[in-house]
Amino acid sequence: MPKNWFRLDNAGRLYASIVNPRDTTLFRLSATLDNVINAEQLSIALHHMIKRFPYFNTHLKKGLFWYYVEESGIDPLPYKENNYPNMNYSFKKKSNFPFRVLYFENRVSVEFTHAITDGTGAFIFLKSLLFEYFRLLGIIGEPDGDILVYGSEVRAEELENSFSKYYIKKVPASRRIKKAFHFPYKVLPKGIYSIVTGIIPSRRIKEVAIGYNATITELLSAIYFKTILDLIEKKGYKKKPVVLNVPVNLRKMYPSGTMRNFFISVTPSLDPRLGSYKFAEIIKYIKYFMEVQVDKKYINQMITRNVKNERNILLRALPIFIKDLIMPWIYHFYGERGFTSGISNLGVIDVPDHMKRKIERFEVYPPPSSGNLIKVTMLGYQSNLYITFGKLTHEKEVEREFFKNLVMMGIPVKIETNVE
Image (cartoon, rainbow, N blue to C red; front, side, top):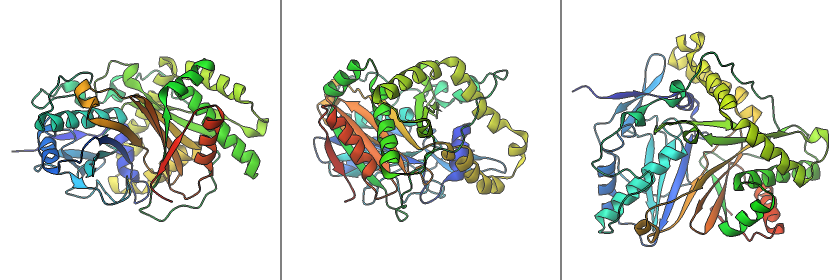
């Protein structure tokens, strides 16, 4: 029988071509449970749930002009974790999947390549996998929210390329960003990825955000801007625009149920060459920037830019081996070159009550990037907000100053790290 195959979306095609031992394109979602993982039951749960997510049960294949994914004849297995997160795994190898499930003691993690999905799609998978895992252990409850259950029907919209669906040809593409400030730090050896997580009480960060009439994302983006601008001034680094890459989940703006990538990054920017910025100025700028830019008119422009790039006649005509050579340069020159860092908030994670009693915490780790050595991700779960710095450098001054700024605002922080 011929196997099913699926096209990658425009973001996926880019990520498939740029992957290397440092830029793995992998991001991680983790759940820490109240008991040690039962590896046998986790394996059965994965065997069940991969049938519900056929677009993930695939292997990457090379076409003449583009990568695509083809249905696998085997099932993925969970593996005991024994290495740095988001490292030492190539989804381009023949027998590998575009994701992996790992476990260690009482923690379950999934690592996905951005070639196949984004944080929203990955979280639906993780929560659905955990729901089935608990069911097999006899911990029964009703699914709610976006949890998909074993045996339910796969909907056509889960496979759609929402970028193409909401692409409007007549809308002009947005302008690209010029070179931004980059941290002048030494890069870690290949295979090492430094993780620093700050745990803060959600109630307190909400109180501070309300005091500034801002969202949590706006407040933390402003603190991150302040941290970087202060370091440029303090350390005497060469002044260039500080540009943050802030992903926006487009499912909240468009009626999409896709499990593939469907996000756009907006890019607030402050230029230290114009003078110093008070924190009140920074947060005012962030607030107005997000209000203006996270709007369908401007988002449509960014969707247009991405889809037009994919449909460029010259690019489409190039054989895939040439694309593999030039796409990393394009990604660096037109993408990472224009960003200082990224900051992404997956929002508040909710699960049914019977799962809440078993899951102590969730975390999200950003994908490593040699072009942007430091990235920040965060999510809220129950009473805490988990803020994670993913780094390809040993330098600690950025996260140290960031968390110090939080403490100075009266927000307590507990720090955890995997690299001393």
